[in-house]
Length: 424
Image 1: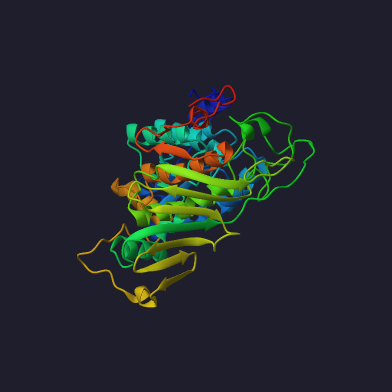
Image 2: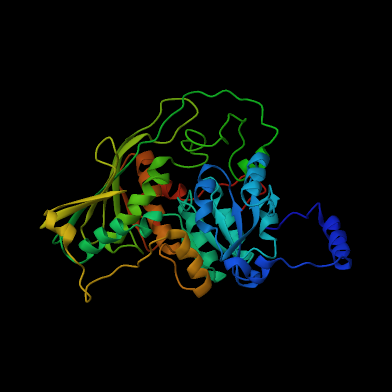
């Protein structure tokens, strides 16, 4: 995509010329004083998306080895709040393309609504920026594949916001499974919170602080109904923006299912299930669901909302099981929880801090714990589950071709039409 001309260009050129005539003072922190890395060694960061999630994760990227240079959000009040939090020095933009043109930004942290992830990530890669992108990766399989292509083509470091990969419990559970502690794996049960539905919404005036056209971006235009607010139900349960928690929340546990099953670069080949959708109103994402998927190795994935199973991931084998969720683990036999992983056994990628792992990999140019292809494959399972429920029939999937083999209509749901002038 082509960036719009900057309205402030002439001002910046004039300001730059004036700055050359003024005395130039260098502060101690720029030279590395006070425990700070010299400015030339710091990673320049830009933050795109400053709502609830963007603010939650921002602090993890701040420290002596980084410098926050720019923030971006279509909400003016969020931009200004972020600037104040960051000391008042970062540049602030409504349009992410202007942030990507900032020459000092080395990497971006993207925490926009999910329907923006593909466009912002691809543009960032083209601009030479490394990318941390919150979950879920994309809202269509086609967009996820395009993101993979951009990361690879432009040689960028990428980290997905599936923070459970940097949690010792989830890693240990997957190592137990991968090393045969529960015997032969036959079933994985993954459950996450159900989606909600807010009923009918009436149009309201667009807040003066919001650039609504920029917030909508590639999504269909509808009157403003408060969907750009922080929190749920916000935008989270309308298919214009996301398939709902079956994807937004689901990708976390589906990612762990893939990790434990050693299928991170592939996926199931059959899907079937049932779901309950809202009957009317603003929200249309599936509320509760039961999806069963089958892998080529015969392992069955049972993916549900937590009205059926506890929130978490349970790996079941012919010699026992292990259950893991945020903050706790359980197993049968219980002795599995004290079973050490030997030096010659499978040890999975160790990351104890998700943001720190991303920053370290920017410096080393090594893959992160949650790289783009793995992120895409985990996200794809959530997307295919939602499509299965919409089609109401068993679907067969080819992970190599990334296409359904028995339903042309389902294949049409693997991509979406973007609102002009946006395009991949």
